[in-house]
Image (cartoon, rainbow, N blue to C red; front, side, top):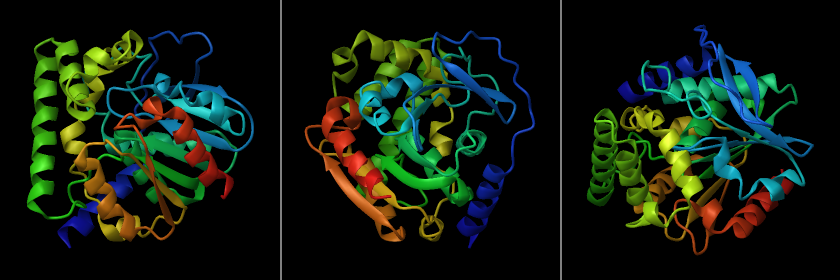
Length: 302
């Protein structure tokens, strides 16, 4: 009952629009637009025409995360890749308390509504998957479909088993160690710690210079990660999501994301699942062709 009550409070927070106004002091790169929602200018890129498909990045990410799949999606959909509040092109120093999951979910819902194009397809990766999950729960009228690529594990939903608890404890310790590096001024060291943790040893060094630049630029947006994982979310919340859902994981993704999908799958009313071969947590970069094919098949059916 306690978790259920807290879940209601959290959803209410998502429903309530932020009234604080953050004046934009940063420049927008060429071809990047901004849409003012809840007092903040959300940056995004847009390609293609048709029903909107909104892409939502995960931890340390921004609108640039989806470049490998934008061409395929935009051939059939109005494909929009957003930067959540305080992500690049803003250069954020981590000050303030308005970058948590509830705020981002409220912003995403307001963004979808402001597009003025009816219900949208929402695709979220990692923490962005959790943002999509809460936005879809709070605003079913704005959501055509929900696509969750390795959605961030929500502790209150995870199975109560020793191996799950161990994986969650490891993730929490990694998140806290990353943020400690950030507080010490070591943005690259903190970001590398996280990327190696979710992508495997050596993932940071193996990544492109562009990817490492994106991760460094968004370092401070990870400050709420440990608290975000603990936002109340129960099986009966997932059951209230009316839109069709596609769950995606990579065949090499860390186990913690599999545990989240294991818990989420039986709670959803309309759900499909697919596994991306030869890919880990960053499956849309590792195998973009297979990723876009599976997602496009799902979208075409809805």
